[in-house]
Image (cartoon, rainbow, N blue to C red; front, side, top):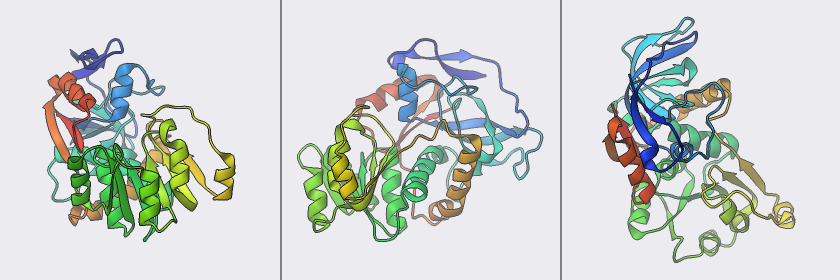
Amino acid sequence: MRAIVINSPGGPEALQVQEVPAPVPGPGEVLIDVAAAGLNRADVLQRQGHYPVPAGSSEYPGLEVSGRIAAVGTGVEGLSVGADVVALLTGGGYADQVNVPAGQVLPVPAGLDLVTAAALPETAATVFSNLFMAAGVTEGDHVLIHGGAGGIGTMAIQMVAAFGAVPMVTAGSPEKLELARSLGAQVLINYKTEDFVARVREVTEGRGADVILDVIGAKYLQRNLEALAVSGRLVIIGLQGGTKAEIDLNLLMRKRLAVIGTTLRARPNEEKAAIMQAVKQYVWPLVEAGKIRPLVDKTFPLTEAAAAHEYFDSGVHTGKILLTT
């Protein structure tokens, strides 16, 4: 089969198409003929040499796919050959076929085409596990989402709104903010021209955000804490703005704040399976009802993975970028 390999870290040109041995499903695994794979920042970091592959995982990039089940290993129940599915992966999605633990495989939501469905697994699992399972977002909460026009951001806006909370977003252009508004964001902040701390305080009458979903990291740490309400929760899921920063412990204690740092890729299979089952229970009905929709910016053939990464690196995209086989 074909797969995208990274022989040495670097720019988009580091992604090369090669013929490699086809995988065979082991016990508890499902073999999927890939229809499309989602592009995520973790793939870019892996390409650059900044995100080591977890032990025992595929060396090929790609953390989410849609496709059709080609074979099932021993002990797999409830999944059959020929079924259209999506899957959350630890790696290997940039390929014609991929093996996945059965617990990380879900049926494609009714009414969604197979290719578009590839935009769902990683974003839905990331947003639901962090905002709802970890940070406990509830109806009426004010939730600040940094990077509101990206794949995670566009999913977070819709999910927060669907569960009755108030989405607030930062983005870097009027066009991206307008997209966020169209998805349900109620507070729009241009981080290039506005102070998000001041705006959050203004719209919450000085109280602050209940929860912040942050992909920036160190650069925003202190300002995020300032923007939080008493008993607020900061969830850090990305480090685009660096990895090290000082923290004002007095502020943390005085406001009774919680800082939560998470990744999804390296979690044990059992944890990822539990997250996917929660997504199936709580998010899939919203997708099928049209209250949440995956937003796809552009698709590229698998053989043009380098061009897809170049487009991602440009920063102009909104929503998800997909690779199709």
